[in-house]
Each structure stands twice: as structure tokens, then as C-alpha cells.
Length: 535
Ligand code: GDP
Image (cartoon, rainbow, N blue to C red; front, side):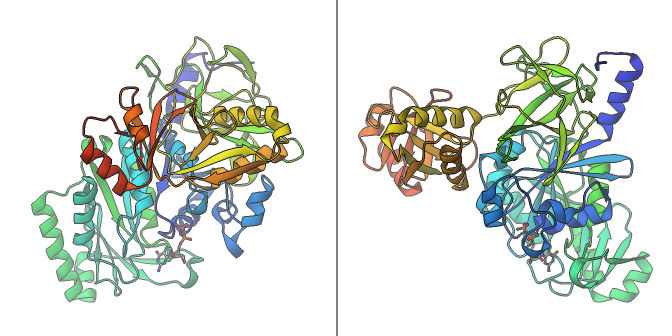
């Protein structure tokens, strides 16, 4: 079997493929229009699978998944899937960031596998809590952000007001690429700032087809739109004055964000978003390894696991690892090395996963996502490589906001209980915290989203034969502390100190923000560091 270490021709091919890749995720709050936008993106391009099969909900649901019975019961998608869209010689890999009730640590981890994010805002609501949390992860990881202000076809806020909110609240400088003509609720069309071209909106019902986009010259537009056109021109002049011009350097550094107005439902402005991804979003590039060295994309194959999915196939109880290709060309059948154990890893059963459909994948390039089945030896953050050893830095744990004590329902299952909890901890399904006070039989499970607890319940029962009882704890905040501060913190009401098993960090759990403020005010000497995102 050939490997990616081969000829100059091979490395040129890999470099070219990497340059064509745009690997990104949409970060948004529920109902901002992520599913609609995903479908619209796929409509405009040639998606490998129909978008409805990937993100469909309710009666739009295209393919029912059999990965987890829970998934069927609730009609939600628990699995992060990747949607591949080909557009103008580019391969766009859209990685799903589960939202809604299934918001979990997985949602954050996906952001470690992307090169860019689309921050999707509802024009009437602006920045919302889940968007803010996800944005903080992007910022911490240095992921550049393109902003799409959605639902422009219906009454919303003033464009300048929205720009101001983004800049003031999160310190991200928006640089609009287009500008709306017409007031909220009477939206007429969009001016492309760089070219001055005007695209007039003609509504199509239901969003089932592409919007009728009519292209007009500035003179024609001025005649048609009259006052609305003049007002937009005034606002554009103002933008120029304040210097809100697209700037590649600050975009790449996460300081500014190219911003587009549009409406996913009538598919308006979506083509421009695709263009923006192709023209401005970073391609797959060298990623830093644990020693801080950039791993060139044309180095031998390497990839990092960013998500594990268990029990996708009930009959086989298999475990699937989602891996982002970081360098080299992947060929199905390659025997790789698992960096954590130095053991070989066979890739005979590699698959590309698009929504709930699986198809066997033969080759993949930097930026692509592949799914490895029978991957029970792998964990989130693990590296697989070919050739000389390389390892990527671990994916950090995120600030949990939900806590529950786990106990075996039947004490005779104690052994299975411990094994199961240890397994779920190592897979990163939940974070497991413990303390001498609570004891081994009653660990505290910590999660970013409550659905992670449902996964624990299901797997403990089905896989480990150890049904668990989870009693929620009245905490909503976790902060990192140290051995010096721990005894005092532990003695305070509304706070408790526990050890996170995976990394032995001491975490202090606090009831709520108000309690946290009081503790910080009364004990400024105590260590209480925020954890990544939300904390
Ligand atoms: P998600 O929760 O972020 O995936 O949001 P959805 O894509 O399910 O959209 C939430 C609601 O907003 C749905 O009723 C959509 O039809 C609606 N919606 C999405 N995009 C637009 C838009 O551009 N204009 C209007 N008017 N409605 C939209």
C-alpha cells in the first residue's frame, strides 16, 4: 500500500487539494436559521448528499438515522456530521455543530477541527447566548469568523446598530461586504460593496428554489429603489469614513470579521456567502503539533480525532472516530500509527459520513473529515499518523454547566458501574469529578449540555449493564482552583471543590453567577479561574 510520503508529484497533489479545502462550521443560537442556511448552501452548490438528509428536522427530515434509538425518539440529531459541498473547484466541508437540546461538549470540540466559522445572527436578535459561547471558543482557538446576518427579509434591527453590537459586545470589528437597501421589513436588495453591483430580491415562496436575483447597475437601482437607494448610499459613505473595509490580516487574526447581510430562507445572499468562503476563508493549512512545530499539509499523513460516536450501529455496537485530516493523502487501507499507544491502526473500514448516510471513502486530503469504525482504542484528541511520529495537542475540556451525582441503581453492579464511568470519562462523553467526601460510588458528572447525561444513562444500561441514577446538583458554574484555595472554598456555602479525573484539575462548583460574585468579593485572594467558554 502506498503512503503519502511518496513523490514530488504526490506532495504537489496534496498541496493543491489542501488549497481547495474550506473546512468550517456554523455557530449560532437555536432558530437563527442554521438548518435553513445549510440547505440553502447545498442548493447553490453541488452537495454530495441532499441537505435535507443532513440537517432536516420534523417533516423535512430526509433520512431516518438508526445510529441511536434516542435519536429517533426525539427526532433530533445527536451525531456531528460533515456535509461536503463542491463549489467552483473548492471542496467545502461543513461540520455540524449540534445545537438545541443536543448542545454538548461535542459542539465545542467540532470547532477544533475547522479552519473558519460562520457566525450566524438573526437580524432581529443580534448576538444570543449560545452564539456568544461558541464565539468564545473560536476566539480562544484563533478561528477566523465570517458573520452572516440572516432573516433580512423580515423586520429586524438597523444594520448599523447590529454592527455596533458586534463590535461593542465581543470586540470583533465587522467589515461589511454587502449592504442592504430598504428598511427592515421592506427589504429590497443588496449592494456588493467592492463592485458596487446591486442585486434586487424577488421573493420565491417556501425557499424551495433559488431566489430570483436580478442584477442591476447603480443607475438602474437608483431609479428603481429611489429613497431607499439614497439612504443606503449615505450609510455606505459612513462606513467608508469609519474605515470598515475588509482586511485579510485582521480577519485571519480573529480581530475583524467580513460580514454579509442576507436571508437563508429565500436563498438571498447565499451565493455571496459561498463566494466569500471560496475567496476569503482560509484553506487547510499547517497545524501545530505538540512541540509547536507547524506540520506542513504535504507531510506524510496525519490526522486528529475530534469526536467519538458510540453505538451508531446497534447490531455491531461499534465505536466511530471522526478524524480531521491534517496532512498528507489518506488512502483507505493504510495502516497508521496511533500516537498515544504507538500501536498500528488499520483503516480498512473508513467511511465518509454525510448526515446519517455512510459511504466508503477511498482518499481524503487535509481539511477533510473521515470516520473510522471499530475505533474503540481511540479517544478525542488522539493523533493517527504515517511515517515519523507526530502528535497534535490535546483538545481542551470546556466549562461544564450541568452537574449530577451518578449512582449505580443496583449496588451489585458496582464493578460494571466503575468500569462504565471510567470508559465514558476517557471517551469524553462527560467529565467525571470526584472528591473524598463523595466517594468512588458517587462521582459527579459534569456536562456542557444536559443531553450528555441521557447518553450516559443509555450507555451505562445497554453497554455496561449498570443502570444509573443521576441526581442533578444545584450548581451551574465551574472554575479552576488550586490546592491553596480549595479548603476555604470547600467550606463556603454554595460551593464545592472536586477533582476532575482526566487531568487532576481542582474545580470549584458554584451555584450561580450571583454566588460566584459574592465569593470573589469576600475572598479576592482565592483562585477561581474561568474555564474555556461559558465559565
Ligand atoms: P436553526 O434552529 O438555527 O437550525 O433554525 P432553522 O433553520 O430551523 O430556522 C428557524 C426558523 O427561522 C424557521 O422557521 C425558518 O423557516 C426561519 N428562517 C430561517 N431563515 C430565514 C430567513 O432568512 N428569513 C425568514 N423570514 N425566516 C427564516
